[in-house]
Length: 137
Image (cartoon, rainbow, N blue to C red; front, side):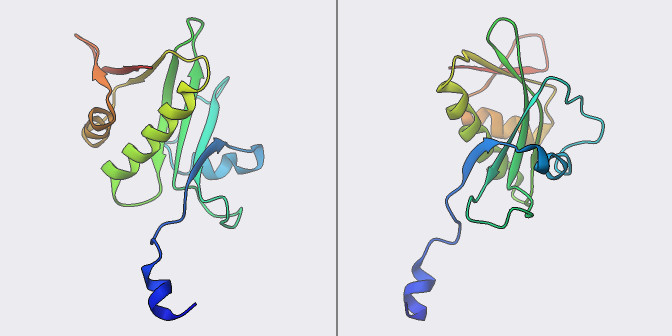
């Protein structure tokens, strides 16, 4: 392949969302706020599957399944500076993955301003009289 053909390739590798293997939980935790309650939760990571296994994921989410079938996102984190786009990509992929299962609603409590913009871009709406955002699948 010549240099021009290589330059024409997309700059970003295809990303997939997968459950975080136990041996990578420490990498997922580095992208979220310290002290997040992980008990009973499921870690998800947005990764380039061809990348080295010791590299940090592009994004992570910690979810908890409710008794009613809803999923609450307890923590989100991204590994690059483009916060709005990074969160939006992570959320779109997470919603798509959860939609393929039995989940009917995804909830996020108390997001900050940057995350709110990403939530709205993906289709979440604010629950009236609360700081909770939701999307119905």
